[in-house]
Each structure stands twice: as structure tokens, then as C-alpha cells.
Image (tube, helix red, strand yellow):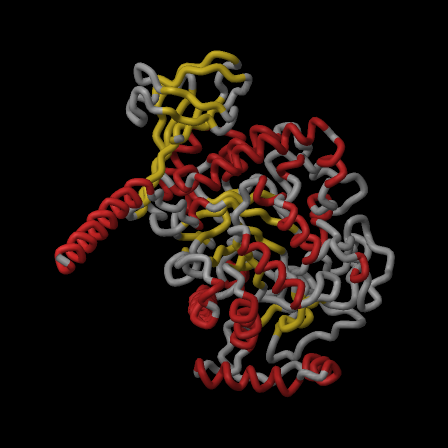
Amino acid sequence: MKKLTILILVLATFFSCKTQTKENIKEKKVETPFVWEGANLYFLLTDRFNNGDTSNDVNFDRTKETGKLRGFKGGDIKGITQKIEEGYFTDLGINAIWMTPIVEQIHGGTDEGTGVTYGFHGYWTKDWTAIDSNYGTKKDLKQLVEVAHAKGIRILLDAVINHTGPVTEKDPVWPSDWVRTEPQCKYSNYENTITCTLVKNLPDIKTESDEAVDLPPQLVEKWKTEGRYEDEVAELDAFFERTGYPRAPRFYIMKWLTDYITEFGIDGYRVDTVKHTEEFVWQEFKKECDYAFSEFKKNNQDKVLDDNDFYLVGEVYNYGISSGKAFDFGDKKVNYFDEAFTSLINFELKWNVAQQSEEDVFKRYSNELNTKLKGYGVLNYLSSHDDGQPFDPTREKPYQTATMLLLTPGTSQVYYGDESARSLVVEGTVGDATLRSMMNWDAIESDEKTNKVLEHWQKLGQFRANHPSVGAGTHQMITQEPYTFYRSYTNEDYKDLVVIGLNLAKGEKSIDVSKFFKDGETIHDAYSNEDIVVSNGKAEFSSEFYTVLLEQK
């Protein structure tokens, strides 16, 4: 009798577990994956976004009067962390942040007809191994990455390999076996785009050289003063012993840049001035980034977000999606994707948006990304920090900017202030300074019109973040009038499909969804936040908006 009772209990437990397992399988929803090809990336100038620590606003006696918007304005790493914690980026649907370089900048200023300029933008490196005091500390960066990752936001830093900062009275030129100071680039062929200085007084790293070089004396002196010379040398010795690379200039810099991966767990690099360096350099850089990322994951398993590879996006100035994989120098075509970059910045979208219909843009981008560029991506933008011809500089079309940037297939790059209509025309500035004003937080806090614009960006951004199909899926038009289309994305067990309508009439709407949703099924419009029951193959409802974002409930 006792044995029979035990048998009954065992069988009851078995069938209970089996039933529970079936219910769990039925109810389990596959988690939305993060996909770089469809990410919503926010690009900001570290110095111009938000001042989280006023105590670090002035360093290295950078006190000369500068040209307008050409000095440090106080933005820092803590300021970015503050906005992550407040939920600003989450509300905007941002799942990756790219910050301009945070390494220590030259201490002096230059004056090339623009008024005194300091390295507020981060592209004038003095020491790759240190964080500039104006931006913060290593502790600040560690906290930023941890806070961002806790909210599912990836962090990209900005890598500069092909040049140092300009020469000033405080910043002597690096040794001649490290850099060239002439000729200046002419940009008419491959050689005079690479083996030259980008502009006057911007020493060019000899990235082509395999000759061993000693550390620059100014770095040696600096590190000894700071009490870290022996540690830095020991790390370099270990790096060169592990890799077998010659002690050539580019490999020193690669070591210094990949340290930010192993030490802080950053998720990617945006790489500056890619076409001004030999293409094999980027293949070497990718190899070292991948190694560093794998080491970080191995040693910090509790901090690993997913199984995505390290993300490398390159700035090949004037590359456009129409070029496919090859950039044409005139006398030579170079493929920067294979064995190197995950993605390239697409300089073409602003022209496409100005000249073509929504459907023409969406269809072509979807076709290109799913054929010629399959397995890779492009980073789309409509305004940026050094493009003097942005799509809408006076911010008269902020709604169209959001719609086209966030709904065009590919990764989106929201430039800080796109979402708040920060003007890109600032009186009294020279050159690209007009693009780099402080973030307009005051307008967000007090201006109703700005907040309406921001709300549009937030709705589209969150929808994009929730649905990889928007950026990484395939596009297909449903009806031309009213203009509706769908996006679909499949990756193993995960499937995603959305239906979108643009430029619809206010009030009553009727959208054909018969191919996607069943009659009686409840779906959701993420723009108006309304639920809709499908009837006769249609989603019929009323809203005051021109945009519809339909998703499964």
C-alpha cells in the first residue's frame, strides 16, 4: 500500500510538472533582442550636453578668451550619467549612446582664423591613456557604463588613431618617427588622402610604418610626473609580447584604446577619419577590439548584456549607402566592411530625404541593406557635429526629421538636440561651431512647442526600440494612399512585425491589416496609445494624429 501511494504521488508530480511546462512554453514571450543594425543611437558632444560637475569646468589653465563656442562649456561624463538616471534616454527610445572622445586633450589652444580654440570636442589628443579632467575621471566613466547597462543602453566611445592634437606652446610635436607634419592632404586620390595631414597643424600618425619607435619624451615625462610610468611601460611590454606586433605607432594607440574595453566594458567604438588611414589598420584594430571584448566578457560574466560582437562604426567621410561596400577614391576602391567595420556612417540620407518620397527612401534602403550590405549596416543621420549642410539647420521640419530618421531602415543617429529642435544656426560663430551649441534644456523645461516636438521623437523612438523590424527588418508598402507599410524581422525564434501609417487624415482611419492580423484580434496603436479590434481585415479607429504605429497587443 505504501509503495502504491508513493507511485501515485510521483505520477501526479510528473503530470503536474508536464502541464506547468506546457503552460510556461505557451505563455513565454521571446525577449526583444538588441540588434545593432536597427539600434537607436544618440550622438552627443561630451562637453556640450549636460554639466553634472561644475568643479571640473576649468583645467590646465585653459583660460584664454576663445572664439564663439570654441572653448570648454562644462559638459561632462557625470552630466550624461545624470540624464541616463533620470530616464531621458529611455523615454526617447535610445538604446546606445556615442560620446565624442574623452581622452586628455592638448592643454593649449590654437588660432587658425577662428579665434582661440581649445580641444573641447575631444579630437585633439594629448594622451590616449588618460581621461581629460574637463570630462571627469575613470571612476565617472565606470559609473556611466554601469548605469547605462542597467537600463539596457550600450556605450560607444570615439576612437582617433590617425592624428595627434595640434602643436601649441604647451603641446610640442611628437617625434618624427611617430608623425608627419606635411604635406597637407589634397583629397584627389588614395595616396594624398592618407599619407598627409588632414589640415594644417594636425600631425599625422605614421600608421603605415612597421618600424619600432620609443615612447614620445613628452609622454614619458608626463607619466613620470604622474607616478605611473613603470605601470604603463609594463602594460605595453605585456601587450607587445602577447601580440607579437612591432612597436610601431599604430599599435601603441590600439593598445591604449582597447584598454577602455577591458577596463570599462564599453560596447563599441565610432572610429574617426577612417579613409585617412590604410585599410589594413582597421582590420588590425578590429582584431584587438574583439580580443579585448572577449576578455572583458570572460572576466565579467555578470556584466555581459548579450552575445553581440563588439560594434565598430566607421566615419568614411562622404560614404553613402549607394556605394555598397566600396568607397571610391577616384583611383582606387576600398571595402571597409569586410574584416573591419560592422557599419559605416551614411552621409547620403539628408539628400535622399530632401529629394525623394518616403516610399522611395524606405524601399531603397531596405533593398540595399538586405542585398549588397546584408550582414552589415549603415548609421543614418540628418544632422551632425561636422556636416555644415544638415537637413534642417533652422529646425523648421523637426517632425519630418524624426519620422524619416527613425523610420528609415538602418541604424539611426540622433544628434543631441535633434529631438528638441536645437538650432544649428548660431550667430557669430565660424565654421562647425554653429553646430555645437549647448543642449537646450531650458526649452525642454519651459517651451510647449519644444515639448510637442520631443513627444513625437519619443513615440517614434520607443516604437523603434521595441521593434527591431523598424530598423533591421524588410520593408513593404501596403497602400500608397493612404500611405501604409509593414516591416518584418525574423531571427531564430524571434519574429517581429509592425504596420505603420504616415500622413494620414486626422480623425477616422481605416487601415488594411488583413495579411498580418486576424479578425477579432486586439492590436495596439503605439502613437495614440489606443487598442483596436480587427474587423473585416481592417483596423478602424479615430485619433487626432497623422501617424499610426500598429503592433501586436
